[in-house]
Image (cartoon, rainbow, N blue to C red):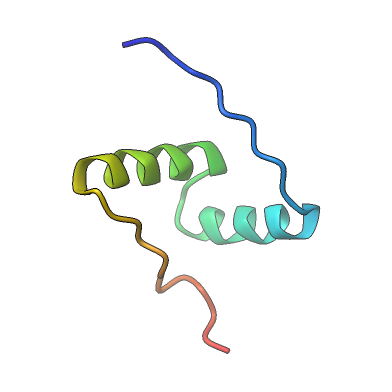
Length: 56
């Protein structure tokens, strides 16, 4: 398997919030992004909800 790099630009506040959420799940951004891509490519769908997110 070859490795490809993906660069994503995002707002620093969003990145910080994402890091905090993923840390509560025991993940880092790289691991969670990889898991999301694997899941999406195998199921042809995208999950946009998580119980770790606060309900407004």
